[in-house]
Image (cartoon, rainbow, N blue to C red):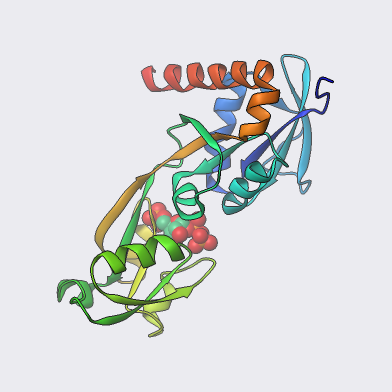
Length: 222
Ligand code: PRP
């Protein structure tokens, strides 16, 4: 029995969405409503006249929707993929949402040097695993303080000595008297695909991957 459900595409809300839309348009993926304005979380659309639907969700949740098969494909940051390690295919770097995952701290602490092996520090982050792995690799005992956003506040109120967070322009750090200590990895958004969907709906999914790949190439040449 062919799967007749519309293909479901999970998009990350927020600043990535703005950069995703031109790629969708170039690849012929058309939402029927302004996904940046609507309060709807599921929006109908089509690709080449064939029905699709878009889910508009938090970046960190895209991995879950695609891994669970609630969405067939999605746009997810490399930060979420590294943190949650979902079982998904990752066929394409979309080259959007570029930033870096960094260890940062108050200027005076960072200038005093990295925490010594065997020392204890508090680290505010939403990347619990990545932060814990890094400090473990340095022999530093890190107490991970999980936050959902605005990590830069934690050192200002004495709740943490370091943060592990995304840095794009660096303006949030500067505005809060923090500096980068080191970059853990470069980040960009990736197209991800549910493996079972890819197996059962390859004829529909593969052309979308190729169209998005072409759109990325055209954008990068231009
Ligand atoms: C992200 C990130 C930093 C900021 C970095 O937060 O967590 O706080 O952007 O960008 P910048 O280097 O250009 O200042 P976002 O604005 O997405 O909100 P959040 O804190 O709720 O995650």
